[in-house]
Amino acid sequence: METHKVVHFEPYPFTVGQRVNIRSGPRKGDWEVIGVTDRKVKLRCPVSLREFEWDRFCYFTEEKSDVQWPQKD
Picture 1 (cartoon, helix red, strand yellow):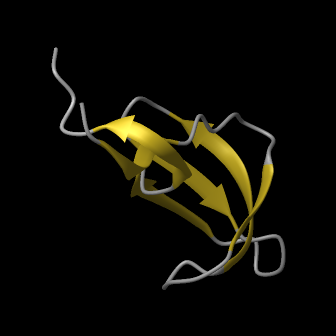
Picture 2 (cartoon, rainbow, N blue to C red):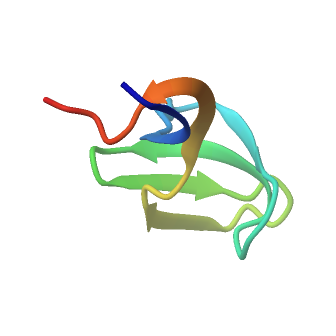
């Protein structure tokens, strides 16, 4: 069986009260998590105190070697 390097993506499990830093993109910067649902995350800017609610968009990534791809169920 052949193996490959595979990148895995998984939604990040935000929790209220977390302080996060988004490294790139239009939401780049520091934020405080002030609300979380299955589909949305609400963030507050610690400088302007403006609040925004967005679809959950952050992902934790991991790269593994020697993984079967495609996976068989």
